Image (cartoon, rainbow, N blue to C red; front, side, top):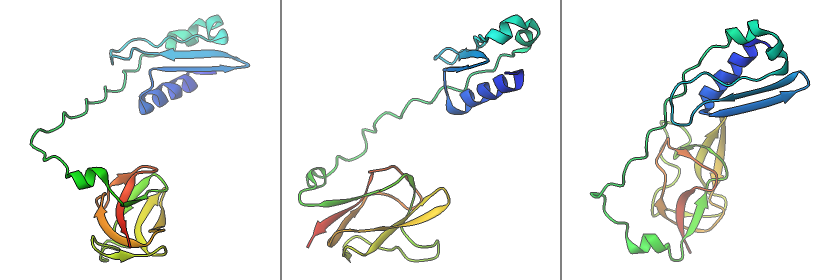
Length: 170
Protein backbone atom coordinates (compact mmCIF):
# COMPACT_ATOMS: atom_id res chain seq x y z
CA UNK A 1 0.00 0.00 0.00
CA UNK A 2 1.42 3.36 -0.95
CA UNK A 3 0.73 6.98 0.00
CA UNK A 4 -1.61 7.43 -3.00
CA UNK A 5 -3.88 4.67 -1.70
CA UNK A 6 -3.89 6.19 1.78
CA UNK A 7 -4.80 9.60 0.35
CA UNK A 8 -7.55 7.90 -1.68
CA UNK A 9 -9.00 6.40 1.53
CA UNK A 10 -8.84 9.80 3.23
CA UNK A 11 -10.73 11.40 0.34
CA UNK A 12 -13.38 8.67 0.55
CA UNK A 13 -13.73 9.34 4.27
CA UNK A 14 -14.31 13.02 3.50
CA UNK A 15 -16.76 12.28 0.71
CA UNK A 16 -18.90 9.98 2.87
CA UNK A 17 -18.41 11.79 6.19
CA UNK A 18 -16.73 8.81 7.86
CA UNK A 19 -14.91 9.20 11.15
CA UNK A 20 -13.23 5.79 11.10
CA UNK A 21 -11.92 3.43 8.41
CA UNK A 22 -10.05 0.14 8.80
CA UNK A 23 -8.74 -2.17 6.08
CA UNK A 24 -6.82 -5.42 6.58
CA UNK A 25 -5.03 -7.11 3.71
CA UNK A 26 -2.25 -9.68 3.36
CA UNK A 27 0.20 -6.76 3.14
CA UNK A 28 -0.88 -5.20 6.43
CA UNK A 29 -3.53 -3.18 8.17
CA UNK A 30 -4.53 0.47 7.88
CA UNK A 31 -6.77 2.21 10.37
CA UNK A 32 -7.74 5.85 9.85
CA UNK A 33 -9.63 7.74 12.55
CA UNK A 34 -10.65 11.31 13.18
CA UNK A 35 -12.72 12.92 15.93
CA UNK A 36 -16.49 12.99 15.45
CA UNK A 37 -16.77 16.59 16.61
CA UNK A 38 -15.21 17.89 13.38
CA UNK A 39 -11.84 19.02 14.81
CA UNK A 40 -8.85 18.45 12.58
CA UNK A 41 -6.21 15.97 13.71
CA UNK A 42 -3.58 13.76 12.15
CA UNK A 43 -5.02 10.43 11.04
CA UNK A 44 -3.92 7.39 13.02
CA UNK A 45 -2.27 5.23 10.37
CA UNK A 46 -0.94 1.77 11.26
CA UNK A 47 0.39 -0.64 8.73
CA UNK A 48 2.98 -3.40 9.16
CA UNK A 49 4.86 -2.37 6.04
CA UNK A 50 4.62 1.36 6.83
CA UNK A 51 6.07 0.84 10.31
CA UNK A 52 9.26 -0.45 8.71
CA UNK A 53 9.41 2.41 6.19
CA UNK A 54 9.61 5.69 8.13
CA UNK A 55 9.84 7.66 4.89
CA UNK A 56 6.28 6.65 3.97
CA UNK A 57 5.02 7.49 7.46
CA UNK A 58 6.67 10.90 7.27
CA UNK A 59 4.69 11.74 4.12
CA UNK A 60 1.22 11.03 5.52
CA UNK A 61 -0.55 14.36 5.51
CA UNK A 62 -3.38 15.66 7.63
CA UNK A 63 -6.67 15.97 5.80
CA UNK A 64 -9.20 18.38 7.30
CA UNK A 65 -12.44 16.68 8.29
CA UNK A 66 -15.62 17.14 6.32
CA UNK A 67 -17.77 19.96 7.67
CA UNK A 68 -20.24 18.91 10.32
CA UNK A 69 -23.75 18.28 9.06
CA UNK A 70 -26.09 21.15 9.88
CA UNK A 71 -28.65 20.55 12.58
CA UNK A 72 -32.14 19.81 11.31
CA UNK A 73 -34.41 22.86 11.39
CA UNK A 74 -36.66 23.24 14.39
CA UNK A 75 -40.33 22.60 13.70
CA UNK A 76 -42.10 25.79 12.73
CA UNK A 77 -44.80 26.93 15.14
CA UNK A 78 -46.50 28.86 12.35
CA UNK A 79 -47.30 25.75 10.28
CA UNK A 80 -50.90 24.63 10.68
CA UNK A 81 -51.67 21.25 12.21
CA UNK A 82 -52.69 18.60 9.70
CA UNK A 83 -56.37 17.73 9.44
CA UNK A 84 -57.61 14.82 11.53
CA UNK A 85 -58.88 12.99 8.42
CA UNK A 86 -55.42 13.17 6.83
CA UNK A 87 -53.76 11.97 10.02
CA UNK A 88 -55.91 8.86 10.14
CA UNK A 89 -56.01 8.23 6.40
CA UNK A 90 -59.19 6.26 7.03
CA UNK A 91 -59.94 4.01 4.11
CA UNK A 92 -57.19 5.48 1.92
CA UNK A 93 -54.74 3.29 0.04
CA UNK A 94 -51.16 4.58 -0.24
CA UNK A 95 -49.20 4.31 -3.48
CA UNK A 96 -45.62 3.96 -2.29
CA UNK A 97 -42.37 4.46 -4.16
CA UNK A 98 -40.82 1.13 -5.19
CA UNK A 99 -37.35 2.72 -5.37
CA UNK A 100 -35.10 5.63 -4.46
CA UNK A 101 -34.98 8.37 -7.07
CA UNK A 102 -36.48 11.63 -8.29
CA UNK A 103 -40.28 11.92 -8.55
CA UNK A 104 -41.77 13.41 -11.71
CA UNK A 105 -45.51 14.09 -12.01
CA UNK A 106 -45.37 14.25 -15.83
CA UNK A 107 -43.80 12.18 -18.59
CA UNK A 108 -41.76 15.19 -19.77
CA UNK A 109 -41.25 18.79 -18.62
CA UNK A 110 -43.70 20.18 -21.18
CA UNK A 111 -46.39 17.52 -20.61
CA UNK A 112 -49.38 17.89 -18.27
CA UNK A 113 -49.34 15.92 -14.99
CA UNK A 114 -50.11 12.21 -15.36
CA UNK A 115 -52.76 12.42 -12.61
CA UNK A 116 -54.40 15.14 -10.53
CA UNK A 117 -56.25 15.11 -7.23
CA UNK A 118 -59.82 13.94 -7.79
CA UNK A 119 -58.93 11.88 -10.86
CA UNK A 120 -60.06 8.24 -11.11
CA UNK A 121 -57.35 5.62 -11.59
CA UNK A 122 -57.24 1.87 -12.12
CA UNK A 123 -54.57 -0.79 -11.67
CA UNK A 124 -52.86 0.07 -14.99
CA UNK A 125 -52.94 3.89 -14.73
CA UNK A 126 -49.43 5.41 -14.80
CA UNK A 127 -49.42 7.95 -11.96
CA UNK A 128 -45.77 9.08 -11.92
CA UNK A 129 -42.27 8.57 -13.26
CA UNK A 130 -39.27 8.00 -11.00
CA UNK A 131 -35.77 8.60 -12.30
CA UNK A 132 -33.08 6.47 -10.71
CA UNK A 133 -29.55 6.28 -12.09
CA UNK A 134 -30.64 7.95 -15.37
CA UNK A 135 -33.38 5.32 -15.87
CA UNK A 136 -37.01 6.48 -16.02
CA UNK A 137 -39.50 4.05 -14.46
CA UNK A 138 -43.26 4.41 -14.78
CA UNK A 139 -45.17 3.95 -11.54
CA UNK A 140 -48.65 2.42 -11.85
CA UNK A 141 -51.49 2.88 -9.37
CA UNK A 142 -51.96 -0.88 -8.85
CA UNK A 143 -55.37 -0.14 -7.30
CA UNK A 144 -58.73 1.24 -8.37
CA UNK A 145 -59.99 4.52 -6.90
CA UNK A 146 -59.73 8.31 -6.86
CA UNK A 147 -56.50 10.22 -6.18
CA UNK A 148 -57.28 11.87 -2.86
CA UNK A 149 -53.87 13.43 -2.20
CA UNK A 150 -50.56 13.91 -4.01
CA UNK A 151 -47.92 13.65 -1.28
CA UNK A 152 -44.76 14.56 -3.25
CA UNK A 153 -43.88 17.59 -5.36
CA UNK A 154 -42.56 17.40 -8.91
CA UNK A 155 -38.77 17.01 -9.00
CA UNK A 156 -38.44 16.01 -5.34
CA UNK A 157 -36.24 13.10 -4.24
CA UNK A 158 -38.11 10.08 -2.88
CA UNK A 159 -37.07 7.07 -0.86
CA UNK A 160 -38.05 3.43 -1.05
CA UNK A 161 -41.48 2.95 0.51
CA UNK A 162 -42.26 6.69 0.70
CA UNK A 163 -45.93 7.48 0.10
CA UNK A 164 -46.45 9.23 -3.25
CA UNK A 165 -50.27 9.31 -3.45
CA UNK A 166 -53.28 8.49 -1.30
CA UNK A 167 -56.16 6.81 -3.15
CA UNK A 168 -59.77 6.53 -1.97
CA UNK A 169 -60.96 3.11 -3.21
CA UNK A 170 -64.09 2.99 -5.42
